[in-house]
Length: 354
Image 1 (tube, rainbow, N blue to C red):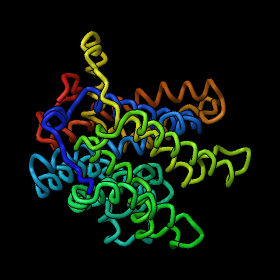
Image 2 (cartoon, rainbow, N blue to C red; image 1 turned 45 degrees about the vertical axis):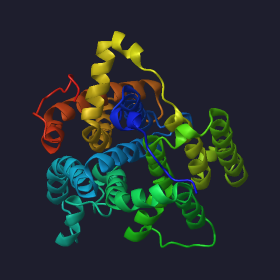
Image 3 (cartoon, rainbow, N blue to C red; image 1 turned 30 degrees about the vertical axis):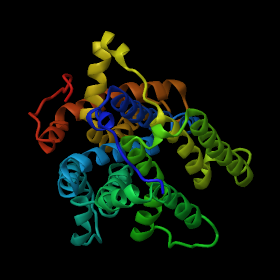
Image 4 (cartoon, one colour; image 1 turned 180 degrees about the vertical axis):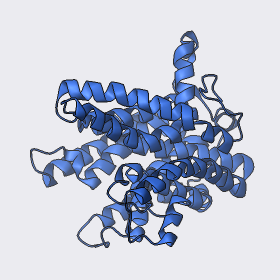
């Protein structure tokens, strides 16, 4: 029976330049996509599955070193304070603008995001990206069980989320739309295989798969995703609009990235690049949760000058420039919360890395 075992090398080289670079690129791609709204970016670099895979890899490392209780607590501790910083702005803004009909118990999701936080129309931009925090929190809570299952039945643990996701999106299952339970179940299934692929990287299981075999498997997933998408979506849409197509394509992409172990010594010649990557990683949650409110504000300001930030090239360029400045201010003003949550010395600009 195939079991997951790890080597000393994978355990001691958990935080690599490659892992940090992948996460930095994923964060930058999310920001650009939400500014430019170019559909092919998702196909070129599926950021969210990659981020879940990297998070699964780091969670496996923590489980192996410190155990389940420490892993769950340390990651929840790092996740929640940046959310509270966002809530401290978003909730008063919504209340000032006449947020009515809200049950105070529903505000608990702004404290512990077990479900998507409740908003009014004004607060939509604050909460639009918070599904990721909700999904991440559930993965962290489930990780001890997933890790236990993976060490015993790695292939079954890898493939079960994919099978469940395909079933959920098939006509055989009709989850109630816009419900808390359906959101949690569907996102956990959708990104579950990516998360467990992070386990497979950490344990070295993927290293035991020859590159040729890995490439063939990844190619089959990618081709299957494109073929399925082309069959079910209209010609004017991207094939990855379909969730099954997107998941299959993403798994093929993530499989290759998790199998890679490139030598990154070349980065030593570019200290500024290394500092930027370190800063993006140290402020990943702050950038993610604030980029949509900031971009909405930037787009609104750009619109006041008669530019269209969604369809006009000049408007998009202006929105990116202004949004980047405003996001930088948000990171400087609020990013120190991540330092406190991680028990680091607070810094305005964490250019020195961890």
